[in-house]
Length: 254
Image (cartoon, rainbow, N blue to C red; front, side, top):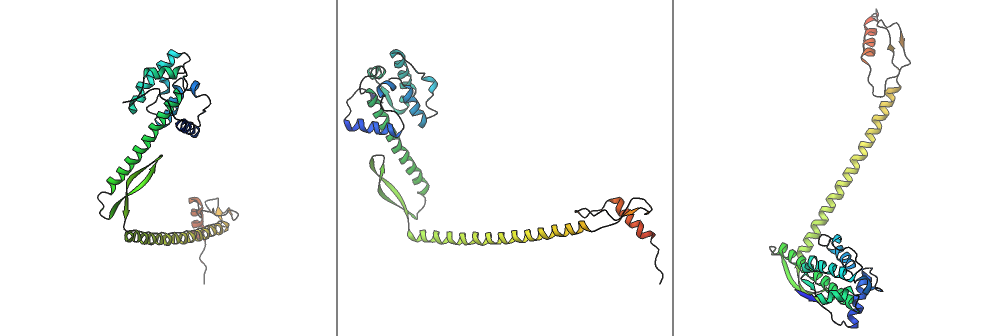
């Protein structure tokens, strides 16, 4: 457990803290006053750890004793999870707005975030290593990589150039197949469109054709003004009337 206590920061460290705060859109003109209470720091850490930090546990305080109580709660509920703790003396310095105390605290938080980025990068590399460890065609080389402000050596997986060329050829073949299928699809869509337009045209022509519809069962009252619906369907009564007309028509004699 690393205990944060009062110490003197160099000018470079203080400048680095102020630059980091500006990058996180935090006002640096009132650090002693703003960070005398824990709430601004709790809000900052909640961005990265929303499940860990509950802002309801840290109401805004005005008196020194209540501010110290807030820091004690934050010490136990949040900082301890990162293997950090604030000394009692340092919490009193923060709560009273002592000169330089806020910068020391924020410098430690900044270092904590850098360590977390390093750990996350290493975990990602190890996860990739586990995925590739069974592939005999993959070779491992060690390269220098910048993590935060430092340079670390990390293993880098490489494949043979012949494998890369094979994968490139396979991708080109797949792209050619996709392009061919897209052209066929466009052609089929065009055929469907033409056929649909032709069907609509035929239906419109059939809908304009006159046909006699009888209103009486004997066919005496027939009207030729009614048109066949665009669906080309006749009612059952109209069909019966037409059939009766043909039945009653006398056969012509030669």
